[in-house]
Structure formats: structure tokens, C-alpha cells
Image (cartoon, rainbow, N blue to C red; front, side, top):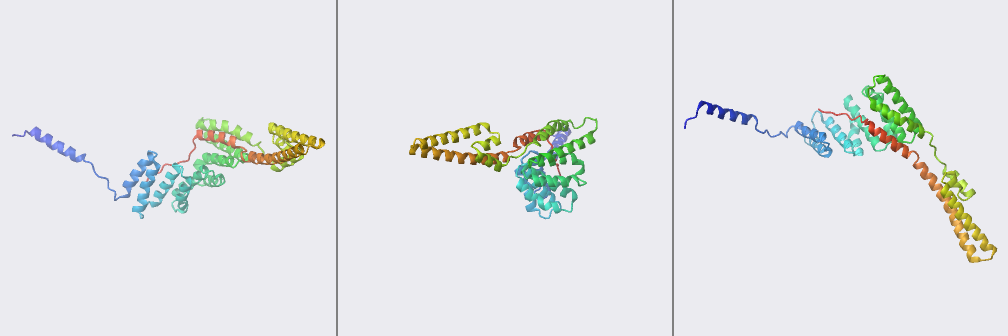
Amino acid sequence: MRITPLLFFLVLADAAFAKTNAHVAPDFSRPQTHLKIADHFADEHDYYRAITEYKKVVFLFPHYEKIDWVHFQIGRMYYEGGRYPQAKHELLPLTESKDDNLKFFAHNYIALSYYENAEFANAERLFEELKTTSAGAPYALDYTIYTGMAAAGKRDFKSAYDRVTNAKKIWQEKTGDSGNLPQYKTFFDSALPLVDKARDLSPKSPYWAIFFSVLFPGGGHFFLREWDTGFVSLSLVGGAAFLAYDGFMRESTVQALIFTTFATGAYIGQIYSSYRTARKYNEELGDMEFRELTRQFRSLNVALQFQTRF
């Protein structure tokens, strides 16, 4: 069978094309292969599989020149996956790094982890420190907002108001009349009145509640503005005391003992109830305002989450 020159050329071309497009097996003897896979999982928000690949690099290539950045990626993945204590544990050693960028990124994600883990005092302190660094200066607006949110998390609404007001000034200086970053305007317009109102919230003294409850039944609840509970307490104790007195006057020992016991128990109970109510009021003080403030903050979507590749 004769092969024409054209057919021979086509056979050679097909062989060359097949050789060029042949699948090349990944080289897992290089850390870059694992890092590429890990970055892919991170982009797909599959954080725990990404952590597995990053940890393979740590285990298989402990002397890799960028091993500290691998640890950073592990910490960032823990943060993205909502495991904030593990993120802090992984990132903390990196705060002593000689690489200024790595040190900044590590502090940034530790601060974010503090905030998300409701460790507001630590978050506020660290955000303030980051804002004063040269690397953090471009993000002063977002860091200032975060310090205000952390102060609100501590229920220090006065400080939160001052910080959010300062953040608004930074935003105005940054944008002028350009109308840029309009999402911040929406946040400030809703957040500032909310925090301003929260500044007027004040705790109730449990001891004053006890004092008024001892003074007359229901007095502690009246002090706490729980009018219904106060009237019920006053009625129960007052009614039981009247029936106990009536029993003594009619020399009905059974009636007197029953209602004396009931009146005494109700009297002591309303004292304890007013104390517990005052404590609960103080513990929940500002919770509703902070939840609404957090909702507004989440809609702003200030994250300070830096993507890093190496």
C-alpha cells in the first residue's frame, strides 16, 4: 500500500500534536505543586482541604524558603473557616517575623480573629496599633470602624460613638465631594444615630432594686420599670398578708399559718426576683443595639482580608 505524501504529513502532524498535548503528571516532589492545589481549594472556599495541602508542605518541605508564608496561609484558612482560636495559634509566632509584610498580615488576621471570637478588648487594642503602622495607614478608615465596633462589643457606646464619628471624618477627608465609597455613607447614616441612642443606656443597680423590694413589695420591679410584675408582686404579698391577718383576728390558726407562710415566701421571692432581673438587664444592656449595629456593619462588608500568593 502506497502512502501519499499528504497522508504521511497528516500522520506526522497528528503524532506531534498528541505528544504536545500529552498529560504531564504533577511533580509532587516540589512544594509549588502542593501550594498550587492549596490555592485552588482556597479560591473554591474549601478551606479545610486547603489547610491539608498547606500542611503537607510544612511536613514534607520543612526547609522551604517561604515556610513562614505557608504557616500564614494555614492561619488565614483557619480564620476564613471560622476556627478563630486555631487561627490565632498559627499566626502568633509570625508576629516575630523579620518580614514586615508578613508581620503586618499576621497581626491583621489575629485582630480579626479576636473580633470574630468576641474578644473585643484585644481586638480594639490591636486594631489601634495596626492603624498607626506604615502598612496599616492606608486602611485607617476600616481600622477605625473596627475599633468602634469593638468598643460597641464591650458595650462602651460612648467610645464607639467617638470612634465611628472619627471614622466618618476620615472618610470625608478621603473622598471629599467626589461621592466615592458610597457604601460608607449608608453605614454612617444608620450606625451613628444608633450608637448615639445607645450612649444613653445606663445599668440598673441590683442593690437599689433590693432596697425598694424590701421597702414595699413590688418596689424593686417598679424601679426597673416592670410595672406588671410589680403590681402582681404587690397584690400577691398584700393579699396573702391580709388573709394572714384575717386568720389571726378570727383566731384561725390554720388560715393564719398558711397565708403567713405564703406571704413570707412571696415577699422573699419578689426581692430575689428583682435582684435577678436587674442583673439580667445589665447583662443584656445594649444587646439589641449591638445586633443591629453589627447587621449594618456586615452590610458594609469591611473585611480587611488580604489575598496573598507566593
